[in-house]
Amino acid sequence: MGTIGIVKQLERLVVHVEEAIRFGTAEDEPHLRLGLMMIDSAAELMMYRETHYLLRWGTKYEEWLDRAEKALAHGIGDQKYVDELRGKVFSKTQRNKIEREFNAKCDLLVRENIIDVAQARVLKKLHEYRNETYHRDELRPATLASVNRIYIYLVCMMMATMPVHGMSLSSPSVL
Image 1 (tube, rainbow, N blue to C red):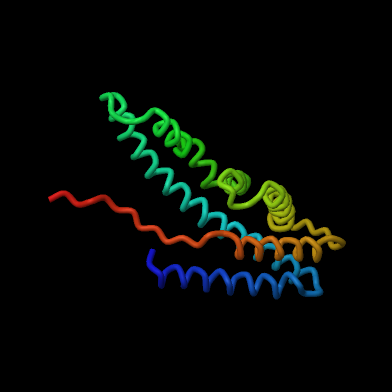
Image 2 (image 1 turned 60 degrees about the horizontal axis):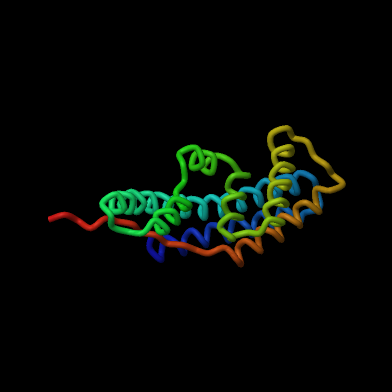
């Protein structure tokens, strides 16, 4: 993705978060509920982008691992390098879980030191709270405003600390 594409993605995210903040700091339950859903969506979008990037690198590591193992089988290479690559490759099960599940995304981001354990724990709980609100229309009026403010804070922290990536992976053309 080129620079313009990254800028457009960032612009969409900023507008998304601004609107989530507007709704999430309102005085009434309907707007607070929408704010919670929107700020959770922003968190999940950022987590998706980062885990997608990491999974794409995992695919490259898998290719490099295959080459390194073949070289090692021919007596060329380094077992330590092969072992290092194995640790960076995702199994199909891991990949599918990360692509589908919020908690698995959190766990990967912790593993890669993108977010810390405490952030992940709170994100998981807030996402659970959002699921109650979204899927079952269950509100906890006494805590809804506070939950929104905590989630807004976490998302803003993620925006400040998470890397922004552009990646273009291609193979050399064969003539």
